[in-house]
Amino acid sequence: MPRSVDEILQHADELAARFEDYEPDPSDELDAGAVTLLRAAIHERSQAERHLTEAIRAARTSGMSWSAIGTLVGTTGEAARQRYSGKVA
Image 1 (cartoon, rainbow, N blue to C red):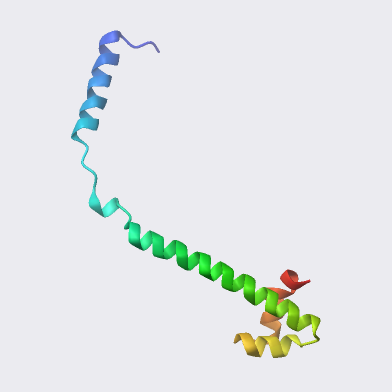
Image 2: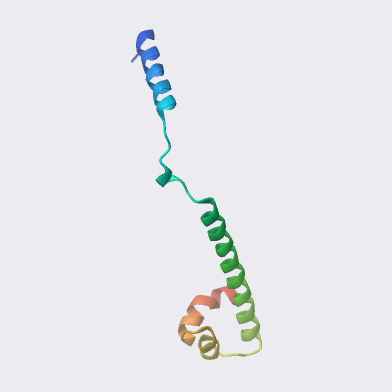
């Protein structure tokens, strides 16, 4: 449905007023320091998981049982096998 020039100009004025009157809400802002720490922690966790997977692969290659691996990683052998068997094959 075509709009008149007056309607288009009125809408443009409304948008300009909204833009000019906009005040950001500080509660919507993310703390840059917290974001940086979180990104670093996520990266470290990823690296640790990669290192753990490599260690489990070496343990399995040397003949270590899933039960022993589970004990060392703080879980049951079955839980360790379920979590890591597809990653170390």
